[in-house]
Picture (cartoon, rainbow, N blue to C red):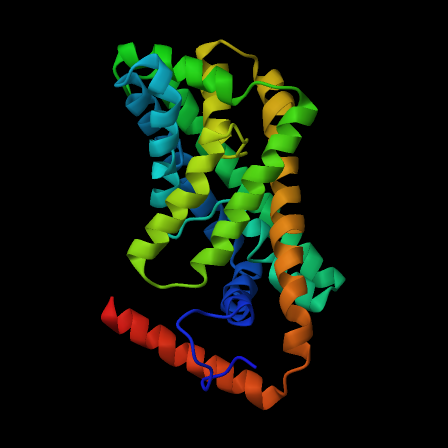
Length: 287
């Protein structure tokens, strides 16, 4: 039983789950304008993964370019997550947990509302950033060759291949959301973000929002059509990310804690919440 009498230095899975429930409940009822503005900011800021990675790749020999790109790719994710903006892929876990607790039609409708608003905001932000990168002097002209090469590489593949690669990206980002709920330490959070997002670029997985910046850059620069990009990359990447996040993180991690939580007396759950509150207050005071 996880309460304040437990020893150990790490949170249990039940405690991490409880840390997600509260934010998940709030996420489901946030005003539409708040979700849209936050999602728009994320769609814009995530573009720095593309620019930063391309710049790093341009500084090294071609055979090391992919590794350099992957090493810097987490930049946009660090900026988005530490600023507490909203990515669709993070929310394949957080608001899903309250739905798994209730499993009713009203909560499902609220979940779909959150997903729709975040996707719209993220994609608009990604499209604006991709268009500005391609059509305005945002970066030196010499960098566009590297940007074009990386964008073509990151958005290539059949519909099924992108869905499959998207599953692993969605898995990693939802897992990141779970891991972030285990610590308040800023340094640890940045390390976790890097660990979970660098493999997306390194292993050729497909992230629907970061990848959409690359996809929209291609469309704006004329190397691909807008319809081709939307139907050939964005749609399958979103599907894959949703499958990976919901099935491989939300459902599996909920499954490992649901029996324990249901078997605990209400008093024990209250003690655990009080202990978590004291620990959170202590973490904020020391940070």
